[in-house]
Image 1 (tube, rainbow, N blue to C red):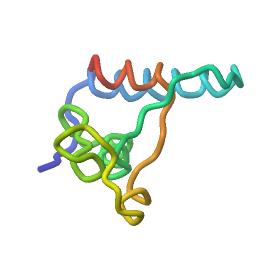
Image 2: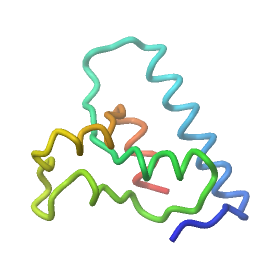
Image 3: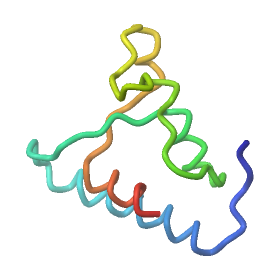
Image 4: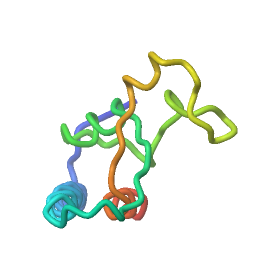
Length: 90
């Protein structure tokens, strides 16, 4: 269940994610480690809904591997490691 953010801390978290992402893209480095993240979770986060911890259950199997079905990969995207760290901490 998702609900709208009501806390200033959550807005600051979103701003920190966006700023980190922009800074990472400016560096244009191919050295960054990338992480797979559910687009569903990410969209809810970016639209200002309280989503809880990162939930990749729609794109990753219980063993931690990417689900092998091609259609699942349409529901995922790769994000830079610095962005992942911000999302994971908050």
